[in-house]
Image (cartoon, rainbow, N blue to C red; front, side, top):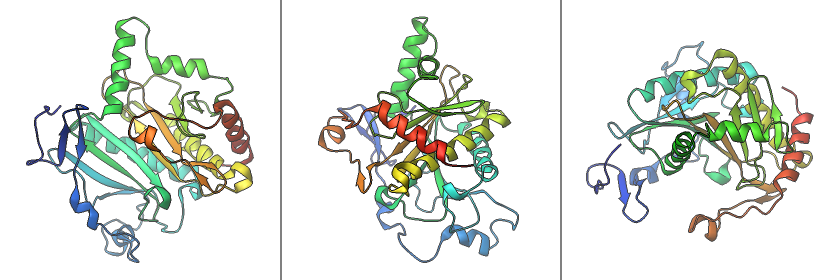
Length: 308
């Protein structure tokens, strides 16, 4: 990990000496393309950068917030069809994405301690390109949330309590907080969520990162992701569709860690979004204006109405 020195002059990583954490300063991204007619991902096909049979691929980020040796940034293209959204893809097509995620993780993890794979879906939370895609960063530091999660893992391991994620998964299994499950993955709206329909996905097996995922687990992950996101869109008889969301995979190389996916669904009611207000953005004290068990039931019922 990079030291706590002032790195502002040499890298985009800026150290906050009060919070003892880094932020990324990337002023050049202010000029990135937004709302233009030309799709850079379609151009990958028309300019012959990807073959005619290629369905999923990596596009180097044209405005990377990080560059080697501090980091790398890629766009993960989900499908050739510009006009299809994630929820319109099939399980096989999303499985191709999860397989690419694993390949990407293995590559970036060979150079960086953190591999952030994520998606910003919806204009209300900053999506600027409509071709179905996600993103990935390899980063030379461990972000604060991952660092804190790993601290909990180490504390529990030292105390002989085992994996905290395995314990949470076990406690929530078959509870009122579980919204969907298959042979190798489970989805929950835990009691400590920040957003009303925030959903966490856990593999049943303890595995630290995508590199340890088996073929059937990656396919089951694809299926469960589709179920959950389609469930978001089915809430309130579709009145909240398309649900804007933030999706991210939490993973580390340390075998004591437990891979999991967090999906922050931003909608809280038809026509209403959940914003991170002052108490949340400035102090980090979140308020969830809903009952997680009730929202879990609503999402569980919505998921039951959708088909794969």
